[in-house]
Every structure is written in C-alpha cells, then in structure tokens.
Amino acid sequence: MPDCCVIGGGVIGLSIARELAGRGLTVTVMSRDAASATASWAAGGIFPAQPEIALGPDATPLEQFTAFSDRLHRQWAAELQAETGIDNGLRQCGTLALSIDDATAAELCDDLTRWQRLGIPCERVSAAAVGRLAPALAAAANAGTIQGGCFLPTETQLRPPRHLAALHASCRARGVTLIDHSRVLGFDLADNRIVAVRYSSPKSGPTTLPTECVCLATGAWSEGLLADLGIQIQTKPWRGQILLHRTAPGLLTQVVNLGAGFDYLIPREDGRLLIGSTIEDVGFAPMTTPATIERLERLVRLLLPETPFGAPERSWAGLRPGSPDGLPTIGPLPGIENGWLATGHFRAGLHLSTGTAVTMADLMSDCEPPLPTEAFSATRHRAGAVTLPPG
Ligand SMILES: Cc1cc2nc3c(=O)[nH]c(=O)nc-3n(C[C@H](O)[C@H](O)[C@H](O)COP(=O)(O)OP(=O)(O)OC[C@H]3O[C@@H](n4cnc5c(N)ncnc54)[C@H](O)[C@@H]3O)c2cc1C
Image (cartoon, rainbow, N blue to C red):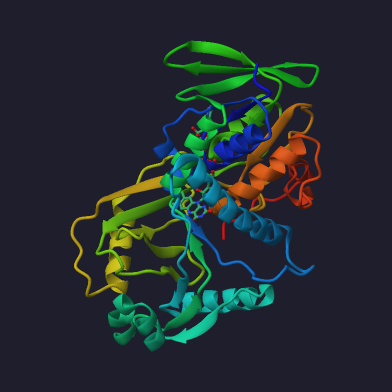
C-alpha cells in the first residue's frame, strides 16, 4: 500500500510525487490522460520576471508564493538535469512587453506600476529601441505597428513538454509507481478517511487501490472528484490555444508580450516559435478552432511582417484549471483526515509547481511550510467566494 496516492499526472501531481518520494515516502501516481492532453504539456512556459530583492510586507500571498516557486525552479532544473539528463529549457531570455494600441498601452501602464512596486527590473523602451533589441521586430516598429514597450531582462521561460519528461524520469528514478491510462472514479471512505481509490483502466478494468493518503492534483477536472467526497470547489476549465511555427534559430531571443500578456510569442532556442493564446470559457472542449488559429497567424505576421513563414508545424489547446477567486488551492481537504488538494493554478501552474510541491510535502509531513498557506486553503471557498472573471 503506498504512503500516498497522487491523482493527476500533470506538472502539479508529478512535482508533488517527486518531492514526496525524495523525502522517503512510497508514492503512486495515477493519471488518465497522455501527457500531451494535459494543460501542463500545452502551456507556453513563461515565468514572469521576479523581484531581485526580498518582497516587502505589501506583497500579496500569491506574489510571495510566486517568488518562492521561481527561486526553486533554478534548483529543480539543475537537479532534474543531473538526475535524468534532461534539460527542461529553463532560460533567462528576457521579455519585450509591447503596446500596439490604446488597450495594450493601458495594460502596460498598469503592469509598469506593479513591476516598480515589486522592484522587478524593467526599462521603458521606444519603438526604435525595440527594433534594436530585437531586429526581427524592427519592420513592425518602423511601420508604426509597435508603439513602444518595456524590456524585462530577467523574465524566464521553460519548455513544458521537456519539463514533464524530466519530472516523469525523476519520479521513476525515485521509485514512484506510475499508473497511466487509469481513470479515478471515486473513493472508499471509513471514519472520514480515504481507505482506497476506485479506478478503471483498459488493462485491469475496475480496480481498487488501498492507500494511506490521497492527494488530488487533477487540474480542471478536480470538481467532479471533489464532489464524490462531498466537497464543492469550482475548478472551471479555461481553454488556451497555441500555434507553432518553425523559424530560423535566433530570429527572436526574447519573449514578446502584448500588453498584459494575453497574446504572446515565445521563441525557443531551436527556432520554434509559439504564438498564443486565448482564455475561453467553453467547458471541456480541448480542441483548437479555425478562427483562433487564423487570428494567431495574423498576429505573428503583424509583428514579424518581413519573416518568411511556411505552413505551421502544429497547433494545440489545453484546459487551465480555474478557481473561484483566481488563487490556487493547496492544502488539506476539509473534513477528510488523510486527503489533500492541489488545484486551481489557472495561468501559472508551471511556475507555481515547485512551491506547490514543497509546500504540500511540508504540510503532509506536519512540517511548517516556508510561507503561510491560509490564502490558498480549501476552507476559504466555504466563505462564499464569488466567481471572478479571469485576468
Ligand atoms: C495555452 C496555455 C498556456 C499556458 N501558459 C502557462 C505559462 O506560460 N506559465 C505557467 O506557469 N502556466 C501556464 N499555463 C497554465 C498551466 O498549464 C496550468 O496551470 C498547469 O498545467 C496545471 O497543472 P495541473 O497538473 O493542475 O493540471 P493538468 O496538467 O491538466 O493535469 C491534470 C492531470 O489530472 C489527470 N486527471 C484528471 N482527472 C482524472 C481522473 N478522474 N483520474 C485520473 N487522472 C485524472 C489528467 O489526466 C492529468 O494528468 C498555460 C496553460 C495553457 C492551456
């Protein structure tokens, strides 16, 4: 019987499993979908720039948690490379946050105020300077498409599919049992404790796995399993679509964000260029749509009008796990003695995954986590939190 059964093979479940196994626990991870069907695989992997100095008391719990997770990523990337030989692509590439119209200019103004409050290195740049920093953008700057922007030299990116492969390999090396293609159906309870997980797989059919404890990390699909435990927490799916082109390596080196970063270009070192994205409330429909792919195609040609593009290499969509108040939920399941929950990471699950794993492992082993966790507790949802739009 495992010490812990982690349900969910996305970045949150695998990171928690890796951390628990590293602390000597026997861990099983159960996941229903192929890695490529998870939000974690679909993500762009942008890690917003973080303050270089310790955050002040006015920083929000999420800002504190993000800075903590960000620092851990450097350590994890090195450990993953050493343990598995896989380079997860964590790079400080910098970002150009650009304005192309009044809306993106206003978003940039708000962001600049926040970056300055947090002490995040950033520099206002003219359109001409954008062209000098990223020569591929000079044509759009000269044409007046790009009005100006901010340069954030310390922004970072990671390659999500590689990071997932590294987590998988690290989990295996640490003795984690991975049960793939298994759909968890529900739980057997006795005296407010989960005693077994009921699941079904093509190989074994309906099966029961006894366990000492359960950690739910099922992303956008968490709500249904929580309901099985009598707990109501909304984890609404928010679809995001991405288009992938191949370009010459080095065409762009910085991430390019428009305004608050709902639209972006992410250049990889091998020349692949990701163009995203959308935030759509369409339920469990993880497919791309012709209208969005055409819009993303127009976007990249608007910003890089002189770059020759062939047919796109591919496109995909993923479902971000939403939450009622925009914050993740990390901690014990209310009313279940040996149940834990890590979900609702919305647009930042890759970034927050390291902090989530360490915090969860501390809570599960009765250690004081490095940061207070009240803001992320499952019980806050009982206080009648309202559903906020994303943003
Ligand atoms: C287009 C897009 C761009 C993004 N960009 C970024 C970014 O730049 N930076 C960033 O930090 N984040 C980004 N995100 C957000 C990030 O991807 C998510 O917050 C994160 O991946 C959530 O991870 P997760 O493990 O909770 O969920 P998922 O990765 O979706 O994993 C859920 C897991 O649960 C399993 N599961 C579900 N139900 C069951 C069941 N009943 N039984 C068994 N298994 C089950 C699934 O099979 C899957 O393995 C982006 C997301 C998208 C879609």
